[in-house]
Length: 229
Image 1 (cartoon, rainbow, N blue to C red):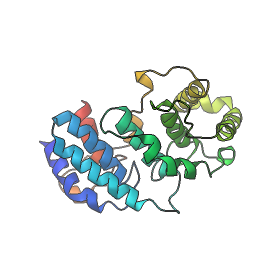
Image 2 (cartoon, rainbow, N blue to C red; image 1 turned 120 degrees about the vertical axis):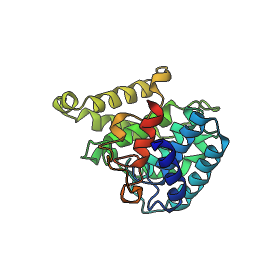
Image 3 (tube, helix red, strand yellow; image 1 turned 90 degrees about the horizontal axis):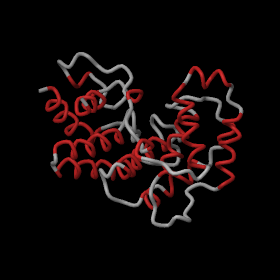
Image 4 (cartoon, rainbow, N blue to C red; image 1 turned 30 degrees about the vertical axis):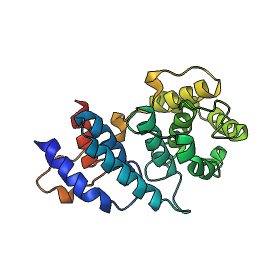
């Protein structure tokens, strides 16, 4: 069975993933094995995910970008995905405090790129995930009001045509506005792995060592889609 073969390969190789990121790197393994533990009911896979998460944070350094594909926003989003979907236990406010501080160092008003992977939408994905999380201290704010206002100002500059051409961008903006307006979020607003995360998946599995390991255009994406079907 392909899924079993993929899982064995991922277990053997994720410790050697070259970067910490969500879509191309080690954080992708964390979220997959967190979900796979639920899928199989086997605690071993959750323990493996927790091992990888420790390695992810060991790889986080001052020069890591804030982007979603390989940087801090994707890593932080992955943590929220696990906790909000009850795949791991923990307090994301404690885990992600340092990432929050690094993310707000980048002024969103000057982010020209609107994409998920490297631009504003990736930042929105992370920020809204942090704003939607259930927290013990309701007064805790992961981001200062001035930072959220800068995001709102950047959103106001987006041409209407971009929203028409990119429905996912419009959805991300609407969720951000819902969160900042203090509206109640529901289950459909929880962080979720979507088809957009996968890109074009590999098709030839004769030698898995020649295939990228990550979620995006890689073996983890194929495995994720297998357990979703």
